[in-house]
View (cartoon, rainbow, N blue to C red):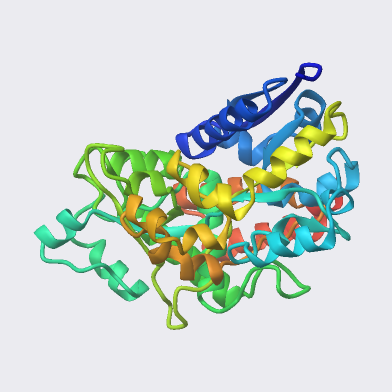
Length: 387
């Protein structure tokens, strides 16, 4: 006998990686449970990184969320603490199968506020045909990258939208051996911070037109549809562009360049699935969330429908790597050694204000020392104190 109709509304971000697997999993889940309907909507990538979690929790049952908001979530308690709704064995299985710090990124102030559903970090992408055709190999170090930028403007281009420029700055610092916010007296030391900013400026000066407003999707779209950009050293990875037939030109992905310590310190991205405190059908939402983030779904339907799973089983799966031309295996070491941003309440305000400082640095003659000072001032005195 069919039960009373139940509808869940969900919000994710607007790209095949974010939306397609959720539509596919919702369809299969609801086929098994005809009384249930799961409706997914999507918002822009910028809204995903800068939007209000409280507003989303008020409007939707299921929300795909960015981990830097966990401090705000813990303060507002607008989503369910998932650790209170599952057994220790279920949580342990999910944690052990999680890529890198994906699981940990949603755990804050004693509670797990979302399940990792998607794993990502800044990685490097390249057009093998363009590099080889011009006599170059894939850069392994930053010295090799800075040599490659001299070939022609636009040949090397990272994602440098204001938010992505800030993420690149974080990654460059961590890759130099000093993860940001690891001390008590500012964002990062003067030596490391200025070196990272100057490296970022050099990349920006040699990048393609429009790079300073381009997010990762824009960079991967441009690389997969034209021959201007051959190599992107830093942008959040999207396995879709490594799949045959997704776009007219195939992008290969690899580890970020090394500053002498290996491909460490890439800023962790990805997404988690959270359940609103206002959800009227918690039992169904909890069941769907556990299933869609489990290793079986993640390594089959989720990845096959265009998703980028958070499950380690999926990342190491032969079939998943076959359909993505080795994307997961090639970038797995980057994810395992990625840098986790702070998540305290107020960090999201710092992030939104700090991105303008880095963006201004890349567009003006402002010095790296002055810019680093402005970031330190924001961090120590301003944004982090507000909730």
